[in-house]
Structures are given as C-alpha cells and as structure tokens.
Image (cartoon, rainbow, N blue to C red; front, side, top):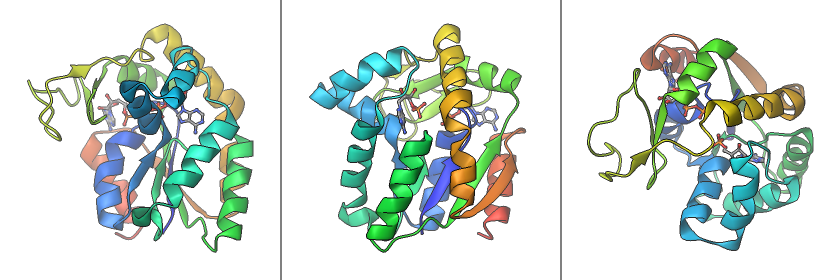
Length: 213
Ligand code: ADP
Ligand code: AMP
C-alpha cells in the first residue's frame, strides 16, 4: 500500500509517520531524512542538497526523483511505502504517478494534515531533532530527555533550517510549489483531510480512524 503524508513543513508528518508506517507494515520514506543522512555521511548528494536545504528551497526535481526511484526499488519497499515530504512539486507528483504506472504500482491514500500557519511557526521553531536517527521532539509539546528514546543518541539539536527566517522561506516554497501537488494526488488516490491541531495522540487517532486502521 502506498500512502502519502502531506502538509506544510511542521504540520506533524514526521511525528505521525512512525506509528502509521508500523501499522501499515511499510517503510517510512522521508526525502528530507534521506538528504540529512547524506549530509551527515558527507556524500556528494548531501553536499549538493545542503545549499538548497539551508536556504529553505527545494532540491532539484531530477535529483530528488532519482533518489526516490532508488529507494522504491529496495526490497522492503516493493509492497508499498509511507511517503513523507514527497512529492513536493507538481513535476515530482507527475513523475511519481508515471513511475507507478510503469512499475505496476499505485497511489492508494493521502493523509493531508491541516494546521494553521501560527501553530506551524511555533511547532517548527520549537522542534528538536535527533542528529543520528532524525526522530523529532518539541521543547514544549514533546520535550526530549537526555538521550533520544528511539536510538539512544545524546545528539539532539535544532535543525539549521528551523530558524524563523528559513522557516518563512520554506512556507513560501510550500505555497508556491507544494500546495498544487494535492489536486494531482487527488486525481489518483483517496485524500483524507485531517485536522492536524490538538495533541499528537489526538491527531494519530483521527488518521487511524480515517484509514480504518
Ligand atoms: P513535519 O514532519 O511535517 O515537518 P514534524 O512532525 O517534525 O513536522 O513536527 C514539527 C514539530 O511539531 C515537532 O517539534 C513535533 O514534535 C511538533 N508536533 C508534531 N505534532 C504535534 C502536535 N499534534 N501538537 C504539538 N506539537 C506537535
Ligand atoms: P523536511 O525534512 O521534509 O522538512 O525537508 C527538509 C528539506 O529537504 C526541504 O526544505 C528541502 O530543501 C529538502 N527536501 C525534502 N524533500 C524534498 C522534496 N521532495 N523535493 C525537494 N526538496 C526536498
């Protein structure tokens, strides 16, 4: 089953992804996490992605689609994936639907998280991220302890692109390029519009109910 977590930066996609992927029995594929891992590992892809990420822009479509194609051919992804942060532009969405068609796969469902911009800014500027495994926390709503509960690392940091200035650029990019992806996905899959406000458990319950999980 191929499911998409869709919504602006900070809407809670990564937070909801772990339990949802586990329940669906598919891997969580977050393009932002793939870029950050390449950055940590010092690969050429990481170096290229860094300049776009630091400025709050999108990594070029051709680069992003190539890494997604590679990921989708890995053994654990053959039965479906939970996408998080992809597709993020209309060309990426069109590329993916064509790729699915030519590989006998299909888009099943979209979970579109709706959160007002004021809450988004508060969520992103308070976000803390495990530099090792990308698990996310929030200084108020989900405070991190001394070590990451998912991997035990003590390396819990504020992302370089989570400053108020870069966040605004990312929200502008979302409005300019990503919002238009939803109608494209709607043409291929069932879209569930989910209220993304309220606590993390309440949002999870709404998502699971919408997907009959
Ligand atoms: P995205 O993956 O969509 O960019 P995240 O899942 O990283 O967003 O969430 C952004 C921040 O908001 C994180 O710090 C996270 O802990 C926090 N957060 C996520 N969901 C909620 C929620 N329902 N209520 C309060 N804070 C939340
Ligand atoms: P995220 O972790 O989803 O917030 O993504 C962090 C950054 O990675 C974004 O601001 C982009 O620079 C880059 N990125 C992640 N996913 C994509 C994508 N699908 N297309 C282009 N750039 C992306």
